[in-house]
Amino acid sequence: MTKTYPKASRPSLDNVSVSIEKGEFVFFIGPSGSGKSTIIKLLLHEVSPNKGRVVVNSKDVTSMRSWKRPHFRRSIGCVFQDFRLLPNRTAYENVAFALEVIGKTKAVARRVVPEVLELVGLGGKEHRYPHELSGGEQQRVAVARAFVNRPLILLADEPTGNLDPDTSIEIMRLLDRINRTGTTVVMVTHDSNIVNQMRRRVIEIESGRIVRDQARGVYG
Amino acid sequence: MRVKYVLSEVLVGLWRNVTMTIAMIITMAVSLTMLGASGLMYRQVDDMKDLYYKNIQVSIFLDQEVSPEQRDALAAQLEGDPLVKESIYVNKDEAYKRFQEMFQDAPDLLSAVKADSLPESFRLTLNDPEQYKSIYDQYKDTEGVDEIVDQSRLLDKIFDILTAIQNIALAAAIVMAVAALLLVANTIQVAAYSKRREVAVMKLVGASNWFIQAPFVLEAVVAGLVGSLLGLVALIAAKYLLFDGSLQALQGLLSPVSWGDILFMFPLMAGAGALVSAVTAWVTLRFYLRV
Image (cartoon, rainbow over all chains, first blue to last red; front, side, top):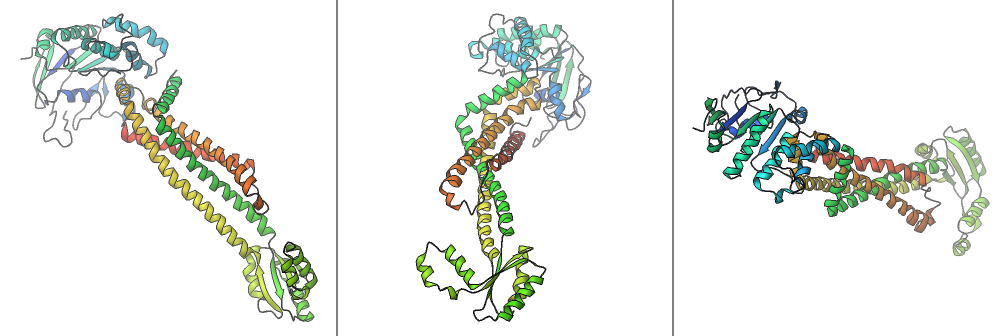
């Protein structure tokens, strides 16, 4: 597929074709502006390609009507570099919020949220506010929020970009654990350390084209 | 549970931005009061037209030196005229008696007018008061006729004034509605901005569009409804203070405004207030949230 943003002189993604299997763990790497973040936006149906198709969970996202998008997004979890937590809500409330706004009852939240917070290693810190948590812990809350609805796919856009190396590795362990539950993980990063340690599939993008697609790859 | 969530969001939203909320409610209330007032006047004018035109009369005044033959001829002609429903002859004595009754509070005027100086006349009730013009054309040149006076001319002037007041109220309602509309749009923008993080997360995790928009739209609708309630209170106060108070002297002239009329206006005001707010909020969100 090809994606050109309005006013851009060259396509952000140029004739890119990628297939990711269910349960895979994939890194997209490349320099800034290479088009890796566009992949996330396409997968979320935040933007549409100019040419080609995006198929997620065997649904053609390209032709999806915008009113169907909310429901589609419930099958995808998302983590970002800047965490995107609600500052006036505790860790528990942040995760519960994601459930409640898609119509889950408080009873469901009471059952599921402590479970997932335990899973990400935040047991006992449910009632801390984001500003009372370290960066790594905040990102764990974000991962918990993305995973609480048991999505089929977890998208991570430079999730370790704001974290120190040790904390980054902890977050990666967490993502790895989530991947082992059968969740497909797609992660955009330019953290060479992490890519080299994880030894997973690496797709390198440069100027909108795939220049490398390697199983068990390194940052290179 | 979702309903409870949305409602609590609405209250929190209204309270968070309470100065704007008050401004929104006040403009809405003024606009809806004007709308209600002009609606009331519309009904009022209709009622009054029915009442007055039914009793309206055309007077044909006769020359001072009219001969009995001329008078009888005219009476016969009027009797046979299909436009005329009823024709009453008023002679000089009766005319003077009526004059005395009408001006009993002005003895100076009474003493200045002699019984003899008032003209004889025919008082006509028409089948259709609008047909005044043809009566006028038909009889203005008849022998012995001095002048033809149509009361509806006077009434038309009164109704013109009432209609003008009604139009002014309507214009004021529209101008205030525009102000209210802009305030709603602004309030919704501020509310959306102050909740931008929540909205971003909601979009991300796949909350449905109506769920994201409902609290904002309802915020505006609540303000519109509160505004219409205040408008109702203002109309009730106006009835107390104006119609039943300082304008009581005009009670005979203006047909009374009933409580029923005022209550009848409320659904109109509430509907207009809620609808305008909801549509404005929704359109604002389309541009501002792009959900």
